[in-house]
Structure formats: structure tokens, C-alpha cells
Picture 1 (tube, rainbow, N blue to C red):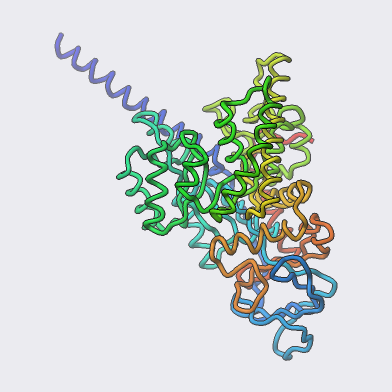
Picture 2: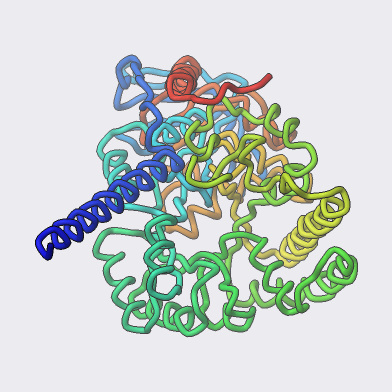
Length: 506
């Protein structure tokens, strides 16, 4: 009898172990799917790379201040660098020349807030949209591998990779959050220091604070990043206030939205019934907040197109999805996952910003009032930052609904322009300013700078939407014609179509 009970207990134990392992593998696989890792990799064939030395002749070149074009310039490129920028149109016979008569040459664009997750086809989407640099804001070992491969010749934008964001959770919850959300769990000063040291050794370019970092850990993170001379970027933790943020002294704040959230906590938490009072509070405080940021020399990333879309995603989601270049977005990301009702989904049945299915009309009305005020408060703060000349970097939170990688930066440009930035300021926010922040030799068309360039058929200083009139992209000196760029887009679309499980509606 004892032997039978022992076998029964053993059998139950084996079953539980197998069931647990199977559940773990299933969830892990669904997470990979949700982050785009199961989408077919684009099959891309292009012609040869072209000559190492060549010239772009008769082009209008954007000035270093990004506020004017110098006409009839010849830009000589050699071995991935800009060799010269002159008004001479006569070149040596042995230098191949591209005639850019009537076209406008600008530095390659930078999206300062993206999430590539496991969606490597996005690398092609960025290049096809003239985005030659990205700042990945929650990186992984896979992202670091892509960065190295791009440095060795793979087609893709230069990658500034921020380490997995730091957060504070207890035991079991911390394990689950770390696994499912790619966060690094820290609870003590020693764990913060160990994490930062490890990130530097792995080759990450910066460290990120999450919304769920404890106040003590945030304070430690500010101290350790200064000691180790690695940039601190990211969110203002819920446990912290604006003074705590200023003390931690991050070099970049991940969204204008973070400032709004900090003021919301200072206000005591607004709701639909006191939304107008909150907006008045933000108007009264925004100038002082902008003054402090300017004094500290902090930069803020915009992501305005995303936050402006929050109310629209609740009431006009179908219209937004139709206007987005949805066929290029990774279907694993847009479709969500079966392990949760929403995941990171974009589509109507899984969209993470939609109204709850069981909400009545009154609750929907109240929610819309709340989120409309949410977007308006962010715009009030943006106005103050702009008025106080705080450095603003164009960023989109790409791969968050409905920000399609590459395409979303042009949407952000238009949103920034509509919000009061001049076209020159918009161009600077995606060229000179992020290059200066990251200390890279990009963002300018000058001798000795990296040849990351975009050739446009229209003048973006007259109409910011001309940033989409791309005729050629140059990445590390390698030229990609309009035909090449269309080939990239078609390859990504074909790979997505092969991987799609939900048909896109018209």
C-alpha cells in the first residue's frame, strides 16, 4: 500500500513539473509572438552597394542650424564619411556623380524613442523612411546583436541601445514582471549598482528608470549613473516627485507625458469631474517646471502624436487604423496574444487603449473627458517647454499603438509643427539635437561627419510633410535609391502578410 501511495505521489509530482514546464514554454512562446518574434524575416535582395566614393551634385544643403538651405552644393562622400561640401560643380572624372538638381539634402533623421522588441524587420522600415538613427528605449541582448551587425554592414539605422528599464517589485511579482516585460528588478542600492555595472559591461549606451522604481532606488540610480558616467534616461517613477527627478538629474526624460504625470500626483490625482481644475493647475505650474528643466540642461522627448491619439483610439480607432500604415506594422505586435485579452495589441478587439467592452455610455463619457484632459495637459506643458527653449527631441514610442516604425516619425513631425514648432525646430529635433545629446558625428552635413543623409524632392522648411518626399537615403555612405526603399517596404509587407493571422480590414 505504501509503495502504491509513493508511486501515486511521484506521478502527481511528475505531472505538476511537466505541466508547469509546458505552461512556462507556452507563455514564453506567446510573449515572443506578442513582441514580434514569430514574424517572418523579410527576404531582401538589392543591387550592389555602389562606389565607396561619389558625389551628390547640385543639391540644396541644410545648414547646421537647420533653418536654411544653401543652394547648388556638391557633397563628396568617401568610405562612409562626408569628405567635402562645396559650391564647386566640376569634379574629377573618376568620381561618380548623382545629380540632385532641385533636391534638398538633410541629415538622416533620428527617432529618439522607439521599441524594436523582437521585430527586426523594423530596421528596414526605419531606413525606408529616412530614419538613420534610433534610440531603443528598453533594449535587450538581441538589440545589442542587431547594433553590432549594423555596425558591420547590415542594413539598418545606427542604434543607441538603452538597457532594460529598472523597476522595484517584491519576490514573485518581480520575477513575473522581469520575465514578461523585460524589466530589471532592483530593491537595494547594491542591486542598483550591480545592474548598472553589468549593463555597461554588456555594451548598453544608457540606463532607464521605469515608472515602478522605488524612490530610494531612483536616488541610488541617479548617484551610480553619475559615478559611472553613463546617461540616465526614462520615466519619473510614481514614487518620486519633480524634486526627486531633478535630484536624480537624468540627461533625458522619456516623454513630455512624464511631466504631466508628476504634476497629476502633485495635484492629488485628477478625475473626470475635476479635469478643468487640473488643466488650470498645469497652466499655473508649467512655466516653472520648464524653467527648472532649462536650468538643469535636461532634454525631453516628445511622443506627442501618441498621446494626442489616446482619446481618438477610444472613439475613432477604426479611422486611426485606416490612416496608419498598418500593413507594415509587425502582425505579432498588432494582433496581441491569447494569454491576455489585450497584450500589446492594436486591432479593435485587442487594442490596449480602447473602452472596456462592458462599459456603459456614462463610463465611456467620463473616460473620454479624462483622456481628453490628459492629452491637453501634455500640450500645455509642451507649449511651456517650447517657450522656455528646453531641448525637445522628436520621438514616437514606435510599436506602441498606433505608431508604425519609421512612418511614425513623419507623423510626429507634423504633430510638432501643428503644436507650434517651426519646420526648422522640427528638423533640429530629429537631427542636430539628438546627435549633440548622444555625442555622435551625425546630424550635420559637414566634412568629417558620418554620411547618414536623406535626399528630398520637396523643401521641408516650407512644408514639414516634405520629409516624406524621399528620393534617396544614405546610410554610412551606402546609397539606397527610391527603388531600393520601395523594395524594402515591399519585402516587409510580404513577410507580414505571410505571418498574419488576422486579416486587415479596409
